Length: 120
Image (cartoon, rainbow, N blue to C red; front, side, top):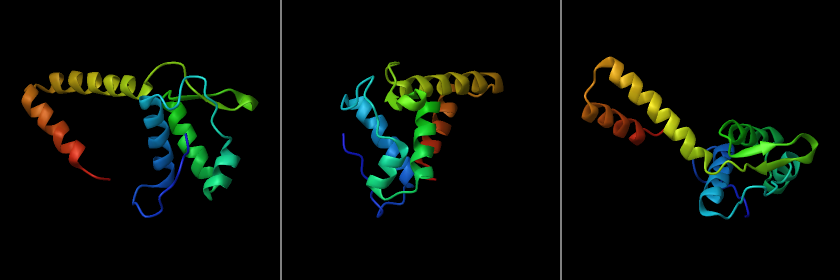
């Protein structure tokens, strides 16, 4: 998979990288165990600061999409589609909170729909 950055879009470069890796996992272009380029190598290839790539990798690792094995490098995690798992956990937490507030399900869903339409 070739990772690219489009400077014309308003999405920060680290987020573009993160989204591309997640999409690669979802489509099967990136498989569990695939090795990612080093932070310095990818930064140099894309003309980015190493901290930008490091941030993308940190966030991917937090979401359990990749795992870092010290000096061996970063690899696609073997846990399946971690982004779906994280979304499910967030949805469960939201549902529990909405229930505790006594909001009807339809109102809670409308709040989520509105939140998804918000662009940061």
